[in-house]
Image (cartoon, rainbow, N blue to C red; front, side):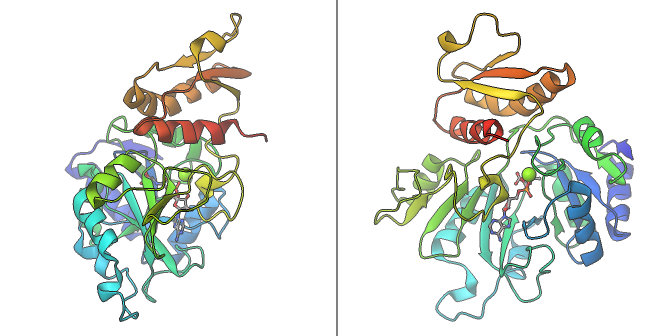
Length: 325
Ligand code: TXA
Ligand code: MG
């Protein structure tokens, strides 16, 4: 596989590869994606194969323009005009392009290979200009899960993609290090109320502000009468999002998590501590975990960032990465 620059020639080679049914490494503002043409079921199937991902774990469809959402949504329910709830419309209008994925009812034309056989589809409009140019150039949506082996740490540089998936990918377009560093916020918009399935850079606070609604502040999976609930960090239960599996996002090293620096043992050799800087924690975490693995660290001590904004997403990933094998 080759890493190409995000210039006209590089972008054209990526689009050509997608047209030929091959897979590419796609830079986004969150993490690098493993992209395939949504319209090519054989290509979409090979995404599962290259990642080592179970076939029933659905992929996120990436679009370059809000107008492409319309074709993906099931509009057969006349009670829901255009197939999208008011809350969903407001969210995508306010947060796209950006690190937000919405789950909506899938139009019958959407590949059930991509949706893992579900009648719902996850859709995101990434903010990275290179991702937008590639999708726009192809002229239709792509699927793009994170470009790593299933269960391991997501890639935040082009080099990470090569390290994980060499051989499975035609080209990786080098769009630089990912600005955010953790995966998008996933909001399920198919029920009576919105549910955050995976926390990300669009925080609960952001969603509350955009919808002028109070979210359920409990995150143990129980609900109150609010219109939006927070169900991430549910340790067990149906794995609607693989990110919700008990163990995910894991390096080879054993992770030991601490609420305070003072609790890290004095002899600890590998320590990650971002203090209160939740933005730096998100941006650096996956690269730092990979560096620890490369140095053969048997265990890494991590000081948890505060549970505010992006810190919530970082804590979520760390708890899943540290779950028992
Ligand atoms: O930031 C991101 O979202 C990155 C970049 C590349 O855009 N992509 C990403 O994809 O994280 P992936 O495949 O690693 O994670 C997709 C998540 C999974 O947890 C999956 O279960 C969930 O989205 N998902 C996809 N379709 C779904 C559906 N129909 N219902 C529930 N969850 C769904
Ligand atoms: Mg992933």
